[in-house]
Amino acid sequence: MDENLNPQQPITRTPKKEQPLYEQIRRHLSTMIESGDLQPGANLPGKSSLAEQFNVNYRTINNALKLLEKEGLIKCIPNKKPVVIKNSGHRAGNDKITSISFIRMFADPFSVSISKGINEFAEQNNIDCIISDADNDYEKFIDSIKHSGNDINGLLIIPYEMPKCRQAVLDAINSGIEAVFIDRIIEGIEACSVCSDHYSAAYQATKHLLQEQGLPVYHIGTIDEPSSCRQWVKGWRTAMNEFNYTETEKYLFKVGSSETELATHSDDYNKSHIENAKNFFMNIKEEKYSIFAGNDYVARGVYYACEKFGLKIAEDVFIAGISNLPFAQRLSVPLTSVDQNLEKVGYESAKILYEKMLGILPKPIHRVLPVNLIVRESSLRK
Image (cartoon, rainbow, N blue to C red; front, top):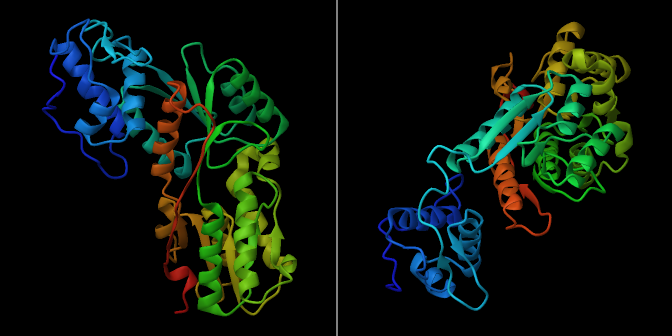
């Protein structure tokens, strides 16, 4: 055959959430095989030649060929050119090549944003994606991990570090199911993960408040688990130290472990944030407050508590949160928050799970995505 494939639709490097280059190349070669342009028994060009024609690196070509071989379209033989072994009938056009499940505690704005990115990748790559909601029931969440279904090849999980969750995840992985952690990790379990940069998020929010208000910044939130909270504390503490607040413990207002809340108060999660904020104002007396909230839900709890104590946001209380959830800009005083790029987190998580299931990623990888502080009125003096 002609060494030059002359692609009718050139493969181009595309930004952000476009299909990966290896997937574009796979689709292009698959179309040529199915159309008969590449017949069974024909050799593809060598990997170096393919890389040159598609203007990509060797690894990208290798990943594309792995996918084609897994689909039964080609055979890769060491030190020889790939050979076409099938040109039709390997799957119907609307069949899904694999099934994955995203297991989430409930359909809150945080999880829904992540789901959008997961669904986008799944649709682009013909993957059957099941969203499993635990309806804010911790036991149901654990059961969804334990019994994900025989047709599920991979799991996307926002994990918790409690023993039941740890064991359920370990059992799933040991049974041969691939898993990717979203937003946080479980230390001691080898699995891929995709998180936003929690450390930078806390650092940016805290530094902004310190610069704007010249006040020490209280941190209201959980501090021990999950792993994201530990990173928030580190980022907050670094910013405080830079402004010569070295005795940070007195500005750390610890609330109950989020996982303990899930196990004991899962039916009233939002109410617990309001009660925590009320306890903060009852125990901490300042003329003015500057607060870095552990997330936007914690921040919203502070808003409700301020109403009870006659305090005004952006006058008596200056606050920033994390996640930039949709309600942040709709609060009575729009909330300064760190955008975690949650759709991108979901998209990258699904992509890594897909690559892991196909054997493209032999070892666990941990991807940290950049964040961006969105400044609104809640952290600024009127």
